[in-house]
Length: 471
Image 1 (cartoon, one colour):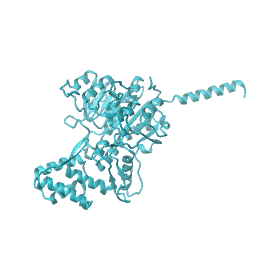
Image 2 (cartoon, rainbow, N blue to C red):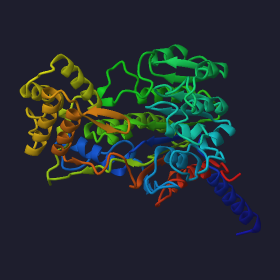
Image 3 (tube, rainbow, N blue to C red):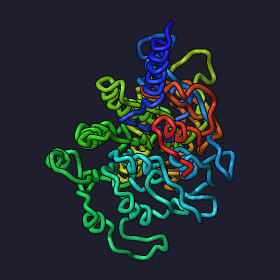
Image 4 (tube, rainbow, N blue to C red):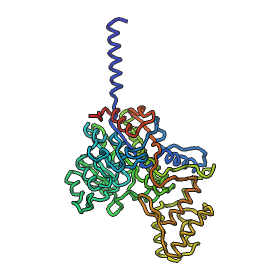
């Protein structure tokens, strides 16, 4: 080989190598199933297969991604994280103590999230969730506050972020600060900062062709705490997949790409209540949102990176408990969430204060399938009957509290019985220290190939994108 040809070969080799090394995603999806451990995913896939009478699994969209691994979830202060520390680890690449949002463990030093790095590079940025926009996980990507309960202050941090699109149910305390004092409403302040406040999908459709920054929330009069559980939703209710589609549509207007964080926040809520049917339907709802990102990826496969993970696992869910026979399709007899069932029981009690046991059984059968479709075990029926006597005979109503709900005791016991008959078990009503799953597809996805710390996830995204998180 002559010298000239050799030099040409070397130059070509270096050029190709540098081109490959410099490949960076233009579009980044960072999708978080709050409380979604590996067993939540597995239970959902077993359920889908069991419905088709198959002794296997039917994969979700994200579990078919070509790269998958797992990561730790412990915080700086505990082996079991909360969503504040868990969300912060995923957003900024540092561990902190439970309850802190985007700061060090003493709440003195603010950290910069990968969403801010994206914004600095000229990318449009969106933060979306199925719960309130000021909740711990979404807040970790745009806020810096020493306490996750500082909802008012977290909401105001939207202004400093200057991010382009926010979506969720609304805001928890738009007029009350951390000292529980009445404060100026955040809404006029957000509007002054250039945000268009949109209430419901129809509002968004009317404004989508306009330029500017959007905050998409639930319809006026609907809950500001969270979107409805998927199992309770009607066609007209705002859904996470719709928020995701709106965000993609809005953020795609930029010519430098976008970064979009999507949180399926109510997987966690359902698991705190140990409500198996509702949890599985929430995973499917989150999967619908991931599907919107995947559809975008199929159109831009050489420019897109999708990461799907969780901040922690909730409930310590077990699949296939008490029997070698899987009976997950039994959850389909449950028509509504445990919370919605509690509300209906309260209404029923108001109208039928002295209802007979047979009347209450018929009521529960209609909404859960117990007795007419699934026979509860003797001890479970006795527990439900004891709660009935206390409530309808002695008029001493009992409740069972989880982190995000206080449910009627009869409802909680009925759902517990249906869980067991559906081969679902729970170890806790709180979070667990279980590993979190990580799924990846697209540009740089091969970097997610070994056991990780949760803090490695955003740092790996940053490395793929060419952002220096250490500066």
